[in-house]
Length: 107
Image (cartoon, rainbow, N blue to C red; front, side, top):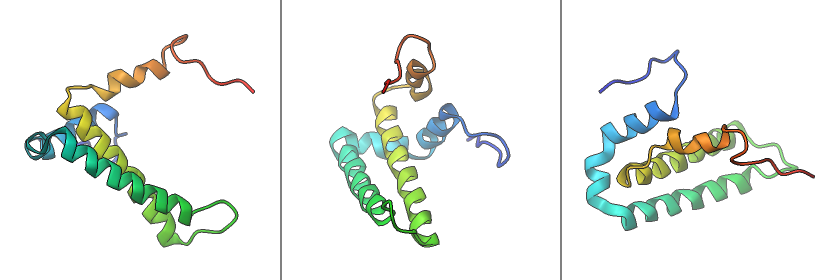
C-alpha cells in the first residue's frame, strides 16, 4: 500500500485510496446500512464537539483536538461510503472548482 509522505499534501484521491486499502473488505462486507449508521454516530460526536467549542467561549486544547478528530472521523466514514459505492470523491468535488457549476451565495 502506498501512503503519502508526511511532507506531501494529502489529496482526496490519496486519502480515499488509503481508506480503501485499509478498510474496504470490512466496510464492503458491512454494507451501506451499517456503514451509514457509523457515519451518523460520528456526526453525533461531531455535533457534541461543535457544541463544546461554541462561539463565545474559549475551548481548551483538548476540546480543539477532539473537534479536529471528529471532523476527521466524519470524513473517513463518508469516504468509506463513497468507496462502497464506487464514487471518486476527488472527481465529484471538481463541481466546486469548475466555473459555472456551483455558484456562490451572494448576500
